[in-house]
Length: 316
Image (tube, rainbow, N blue to C red; front, side):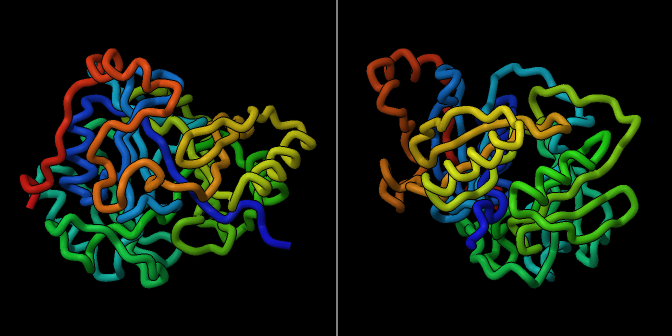
């Protein structure tokens, strides 16, 4: 029987200034802006999608940028660090590049045999770059970052929880994850244990609850193949007492949502139809794309959104 869940689909964060958000993720990190749209649940707020060339599942970091949003605070009940995958010999390049643009970066650390660096974006969003030779996905670059050092997609994500037992049961009994290992208070899980499907739980029994706002993760989405497998996941979760939403149409995929026992918002999203359904692949992210129900309000919506531009040339 094929697994219903195959790894991470996307991770969505709350951000502040929209232009700074685009500058950091396209300019400094070199991800492709594959879609400019709106938060389908709050039409006066952007929703940016950053990923590889086509925004393939497992590569897409998305943001809801709110101009003037106060900073959130990392804590328990949250996804605190998003890890991206880079080449085995890329950390020196990234340390130099991040420092060039004034980003404070950690010393090289080792975790489960892989080397990584840790830093924060302009909103204090926690990010890691994990160097490895197990990722054969091609990275994306606008040309200002060498292809061999480009980000290839997610490596994994860290959940900061007060306890792990109930979340571990959810992952391993109902979401096709397996226990991989433990280092201290960090416990690792994966569907196959490869870049793009790793979930770490860091247990912080006495930790303070996080405060969600700019610089914190709103939710993590897991991959499922199609509508049929999504409904199967929904049934499994409902049969086991999880409060799961109805299927929601997000244009580029469909989604269901629920809270895992530690408090993190989980989503299960379909792999398709993808981001090229309303833009040519060569021009992804160039226009503000709206769902059909929002088109009659386009003029009002566009007036409410801060104008932004793509300016990766300033980050060579």
